[in-house]
Image 1 (cartoon, rainbow, N blue to C red):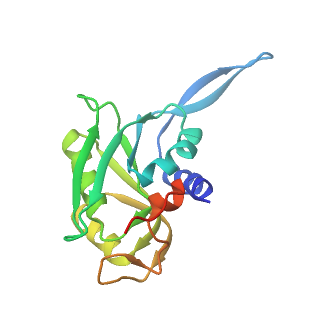
Image 2: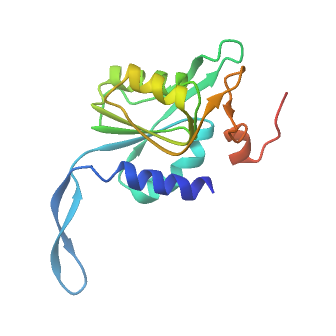
Length: 180
């Protein structure tokens, strides 16, 4: 289900991308079509965001894929960056940040902050489920960031988990056991 939802999110998030004329040659004729004018980067937040990459690449095959590793400190509910695979020079205009769950907004803010400091002009966050407090926090910190979600759950519990949510998205996507 995550794949199908990621395609729908990417479809919505790419509707306003700029296009340029492009000549397409078929075995029978040449015609005028359109191609992306903006350079797009796909940035999954590891690990759970990886489950959304393939369907987004299927929709935008010319996009580059980079990786940001962030995990949530369970004591503070704040993100900790442990991995970044961004090239030295910013080669894109728009970054699609993939994270299936937007709870507190901490990981999304950290990822968007890294990308903005790197020079990306536009960041779009694609999440399957979000909690309103996380949406509010991201839009407060980055009013220009666009957020695309499939469902908004009403609250976070005292451990800052989305309620009702779906559990650990990475464990669900990769069929791994929950480690307590």
